[in-house]
Amino acid sequence: MSYIEEGNIEDVKISFARKALGIVTALLKCAAGVVILVGTEFLVMVVMYMCGLDPDIYNGVYSAVSSVIGIVFLYLFSLVEGTIVNKKKSHLIRFNKPDPKSFLYAVVIGFALLGIVQVYLIAASLISEYFEPVNEAVQEYSESMDVYKEEIVYPFWDKILYIVAIVFMVPIAEEFAFRGIMYGAVNRRLNAAWAVGISAAIFGLLHGISIHIGYALISGFIIGAAYYVFDNIFVTAVIHGVFNLFGSAIYYIAELFGISEERVPSMFLVKFAMFLPAALILAQGITARRRTKNEQA
Image: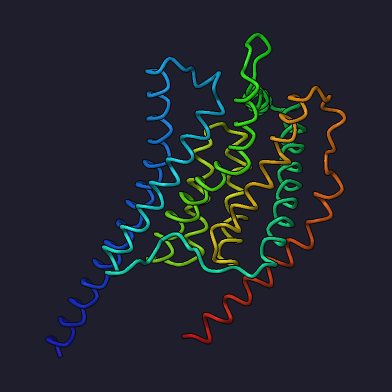
């Protein structure tokens, strides 16, 4: 009897060690995603300074080039990792063929996310009237959103490039990193809930500013849930792109063509009208994925 018990204990130890090793491996892959994303930004910044280009002035060049390089390296990492781990081209980043309706749903979720973040910012603004640390954080966030300073002349073409970058290239690069590499690595070793939580937490923390961290964390959870539902990285990139377009890029476009901010459509009603449809899309999608998983089990 003691031999059986000793054998069971050894099996438990081996199983625990394998699971622990798997979790550590997943976290290391998350770290690799961060290093690739942040490292390419740093590398591009250094090269631009060496070439006599100030990244603060040529922000479009900096954002576009660093995002494109990041996309390439994140894709290659996913490809190489899959080849090494599974002896085949098994990506951490999911490129499954989406239903055409998925992109329409992504737009709906993107607008709903804008509304949720607007509620968050309104709440933060109200709280800031009573708590000085929150007030300082709100002011710091507002200042960080002013990419262009009035006393500096920025190239017109670079402003156009910056808008293109934050709507298209930056969302793809960040989705490859956070929902692709990080979510994929954690989901493989644990489960989707852990994958959504950890990738959202890293997404929030890397945004750096206290107020920004809060809504980035919320956004990370919602986009992570959408990734679980649609199982396609480009669907979440559309959500991210819609958020960036109507959350910030639309104001840069208005400024570029001399349109006052007051005349920019706030999409106020659209944002809040999308709450219920987006919630239904995600709820039904999560239920369907769980049902499919249970049937396969």
